[in-house]
Image (tube, rainbow, N blue to C red; front, side, top):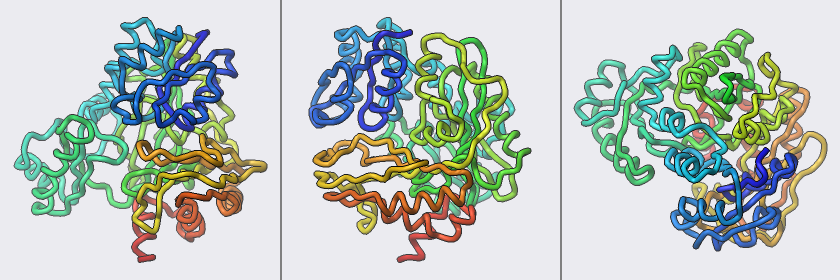
Amino acid sequence: MFSKVLIANRGEIALRIIRACHELGIEAVAVFSEADRDSLHVRFADEAVCIGPPSVAESYLNIPRIIAAAEITGADAIHPGYGLLAENAEFSEICDASGITFVGPTAAQIRAMGDKVVARETMMEIGVPTVPGSEKALNSVREALRLADEIAYPVMVKAAAGGGGKGMRIARDAGELERVFGSTRMEAQAAFGDSSVYLEKLIERPRHIEIQVFGDTHGRVVHLGERDCSVQRRHQKLIEEAPAYGLSPELREEMGQAAVRGAAGIEYAGAGTVEFLLDPTGAFYFIEMNTRIQVEHPVTEVTTGLDLVKEQIRVAFGAPLSFPPEPASHRGHAIEFRVNAEDPERDFMPAPGRIDVFHPPAGPGIRLDTHVYAGYTVPRYYDSLLAKVIVSAATRREAIDRARHSLDNFVVGGVPTTLSFLSRILRDPRFVKGAVDTSLVDRLMSEAA
């Protein structure tokens, strides 16, 4: 096994990886910016290296400084977590060239799935259902208009290198498509350094269902069940749960096997997530594959009893998957809530600042993944995620009841948070009944306006 792993990330996911390393008997190295000097991941790591000023470009995205930190500390592997450099093929290649193991898939696999147009083409060739749309990047609005007439409005213009809900615009007619085509390209260039866009048929009021897959370097790929990530705002996930409510055994199996087929088709190794849109008729369509651990991985861990981060490290070392041959079955129900330092009353504006009081929920069936403590200052430079509350119970209804008490008893003082908004969703009759889709939050907000 590795002797020392450097974590090229920050916040709660860095702490999560440090704990996994320590359980495996591996020393953990933290990197941090000047703004994160007092962060818990720095405190709990065996070693810590400052890699630059607060700006992510000069610290957490600065590949030479991260590689230098790994070499100085003698780390033999780097775990990228999620976000930042987790899906950066160049980073994976540089790790390999430096004799350091990248805990994740190969650069070729990252590239194949990182470009959404290439990913669509690849999945179509493998036989995974995809949303009707363009088979390549579009070079002009004229091409987009011609294709939109073929597949019928409404359509969505999407950045080929997109992710995190950025670089996506809906067009319901030709005039709107002409307006959003150029703005989407500009946003794509600004956010991802790539202005390429493609077109997809807009699936109205779908559910967002993702399948957790895992592959090893010995040719084995399995799936660990699904998660429902339909509760979103501006394509950013707020609540995730496993298993997805109301799926028939046949549909669950069909989606799982499609995900395995897609991952096996690119000989995938490591943790990955194959994401689908499920329309009201029961048809499902591939939209993307994330070649990393997901923010919402804890709901799969809670319901399967598996440790996905430790498995990532084992697989990167060359060990075969430790999972049993048959697909994992969910035990009970788990729901994850992302608690952010944002002000729901001000259009969810990020709210950095000092946390004066931090009293999280505790008790049976409650897991908290966080890097926050009383006296911690939320930096203005990074994602506003404070904590993930994961509740589990024997049934979905029991998990919802437990979640209500957990969120109501979660006290954060000093900065606004999304706790009250999450509690509103929990009490909405549509959510309680499982009648969720990706437009639920938008409807909830418009009804309250």
